[in-house]
Each structure stands twice: as C-alpha cells, then as structure tokens.
Length: 100
Image (tube, rainbow, N blue to C red):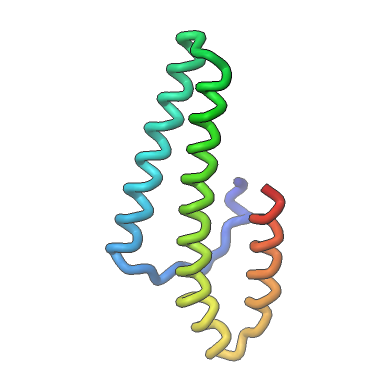
C-alpha cells in the first residue's frame, strides 16, 4: 500500500487489543513461512491449499476484530463529532472486505 493512501488518523485501541492482534499476526506470519517451506519441500498441493485456507481464515478473523474495534471506537467518536462521512467510509471498507 502506498503511503499516500494511509490515513493521517490514529486508532485508539487498548494495549491488550493491540497485543492480541500482534499475537494473531505473528501466528499468521509463522503459518506463511510454513507454507513456503511446504512448497520448497514439494508437499502435496492439497495440503498446501489447506494451510492457505487456514491463513485466509485467520486473516479474516483479524479483519473482523479490527472492524469491530473501529466501529466501537473511531466511528462512534467521529459521529459524535458530527462527522457522518465516516459511515460512507465504513461502507466502502465493508464492500472491499466482502469482495475477498
């Protein structure tokens, strides 16, 4: 993702929430390294695909947690400030997530 696409806004998640996401992402990173190893070892394609499906599921779980946190904190805060454009932003994000 290009830097200019990144928002200047910051999230307001708790340290526990961020730690949970980091743990999950570290696990996913390990799974990806495992898949690379399977490919290097000429593992059976179905076994590799099964692992990739597990990675996709884990990433979807992280996305859902982030979306929930975003809606409960950032979106609520912006609506309370009178910024209702955030609703359109969230809808675009959800549409993007559902394309996967």
